[in-house]
Image 1: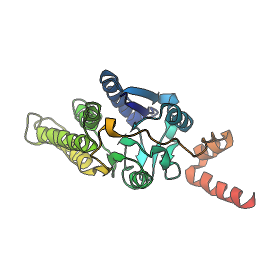
Image 2: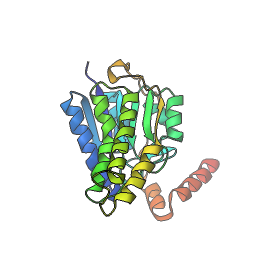
Image 3: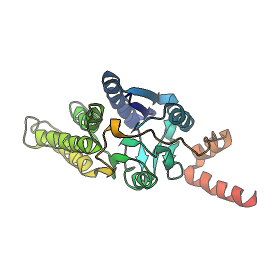
Length: 251
């Protein structure tokens, strides 16, 4: 059985530059272990491309490496990829997110709508961007994906992520890395990320045990018009939402 997978990995600022690079390890490991993975990265990491990718590739496993919020995850250039309105797109899939906050409200919604499991973080995912510390965050964040690729369950993946964070915390607190100049700060953020990790839904499933996800019944997204993009860029998302509410009342 071929396991179909899809990964979304934008890159448009410093943080997503790192998460994009981390996602390449996951991509390469998936290929090495025989998974059929579709890559939507950088300029291809859009809502429209995700919709068509889910329709055509219909992955069992969905990865997201980028920014997130409590009720949404983001596409290229900070536009919304999935929120509470289209969370049903993840129905029947195992979702693995390396982003901030989304395992809270969005994770709950995905499971409510029939998602198999949602692995992610309920608080900000913080990390040090300098060597050698950054490698410990990448290793921890990616460790669960490698377990899934090797026939592990969602529970196995989440446990491995937790244990890998703990390994690195010990390294900086009592191990060989304890005398490094930023060891204490690295341990603080590793602990924060570890304790923010959550698995929601059914963690007992292996990828090969997950049946074919249902087809997406919602209509494809409409690309935003240039005027909307300009208003959001100049005045922010709240202003754009406010103006849209006025428009909807008078039309």
